[in-house]
Length: 539
Image 1 (cartoon, rainbow, N blue to C red):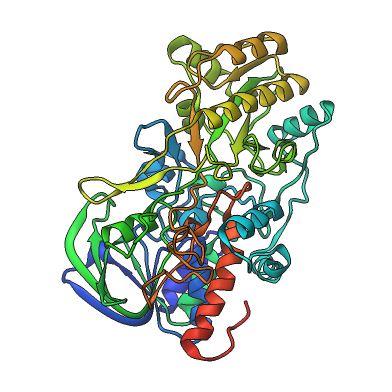
Image 2 (tube, rainbow, N blue to C red):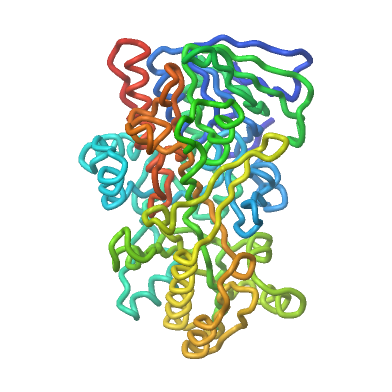
């Protein structure tokens, strides 16, 4: 008898007869024939699946990771990272200098993100219009699509008081005259626990796992889990089929079984890095050699600090306060700007991120309850010295991102560390630790400022992380600038679309999930109308 008081829509759906196939259990090769095959179940794939299924199309969803539900989310890092993240949350750039966190389960990164939901900033859209010819991407033109997704996913400003971790950012910034605001979140009935990054145990987070994908499955869509899309097979200007391999139950290796998919149309929604990786493996048309390039990250640096009182940064809504002050002090194509937020601090994640080792590191972790951190998300992709990195293929065909950090970006990192440290001292920090291998703990703003100015800025010395990978399948109607059109159609292929953050020509300058939802809502609605000849459904 189930005594859990929290309804589990995934288990209820499975019990009602959803067509979900765990490919790790296949005992023979399989073939599928559908109207639309969607590769990836994150923000782009989930929205596309719901809209196309509402239009009456036969949908197949393909996901490399497992299907998990709230009953599996135990608020434990040791369990969550291997099960729910690409490469156990340890994916890195080619030179190992940047740690990248991306989801790898049904729902993709929406299952594990921290719920911050911002519309694409207007200056970012204006830059796309001016530099990539995306005239249809004016703020007023996209507003109805954002309205639609905000209603669907309950996106509203966080109404409860911020936890102490977030409030220290607010109080410190306020003392320095730096503006802050409340973050909108996609939650419904949030318990304010603080463990969003390990999968929401109460189903309050309105991820694709509990919204669009259940809706599509209830309309007859088929979901293949533990299935890796290996290659799109082309015949003339069309994709003829998709070759997939089943993955073992532990998610580590192919099981030996294969899956072949034939569809009228294919939508690639594997996210930046994986989407360009699949297209590169498939030798997709790329006459101007731009596939995989302009992959941007929002490079993130952080500063930790100790206070004389408990902060308990692991408890409460992870992100509820932000500042865009340093995105607006210079032109968008001037010196690199940065957004300020705070991260939730959980022992494994923060201990692996802090610099130092041995007694110094142990001392800091023993005072974990008093620890606070600010992060700066650098807005890359808007300057000739910040064009992002390139997705390449390893010898075995897996994708890896080569992302050199330029002096232009290092200058932004140095300025961001100064900003964060000054705010932490203004908020009452006793010791501040800019996260750099040669930095120490500093007890005054003047000593910290002097040290930060003198630090060397180069790979592996300054800890750089990112959870926002974008670009690689740049969107533009000019084929010299983009591999995908402004309607999401892949140039030169008549039945292939890309619907995810890999479309973005630059970084967003804000947490990107709502940008993916809103833009995909528009693209999927256009695709539904094209494939059915009828008006697209409204979510």
